[in-house]
Image (cartoon, rainbow, N blue to C red; front, side, top):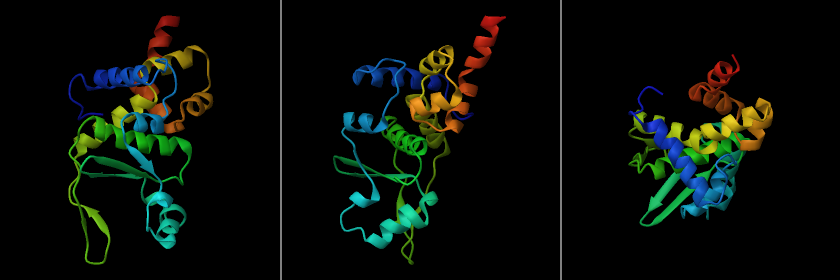
Length: 190
């Protein structure tokens, strides 16, 4: 997380707390990104929900090659739609949706997409800073420092915490490392 501007991680923690408050959740409660999307007025579909999308395309996206994509956000006038790959496990789906919502919350300019002559969609730009910011905010929305600290103090195992917060083990480990709570608790014990 080297490209993050000064104070960005604090902004993420405050944003996570603010959305939990708006949704009537305790600061240490899990956050369902689908609920957050509804709160933000954002539609969430899976490929099966897309009208006129052929069954062969749905099969390709969800069964043949589900690892080739996670989610895509489409904006048209006032409509914001996230099409979410529902093939992966819950942790990956939650992270993918939270990542897309983070781009929207942070008001990132969307990447431009074009079609190649053979019909493939390609992005013509990639903003590494925006991706890093969205990754940081998404992880914090799903697992804020305060909630992680509370769960560790409750002596939850990593597997139990990941399941409770609906995140992957990798995201949980990343948040434990980035927040420094293990060092904090070790210092407090000694």
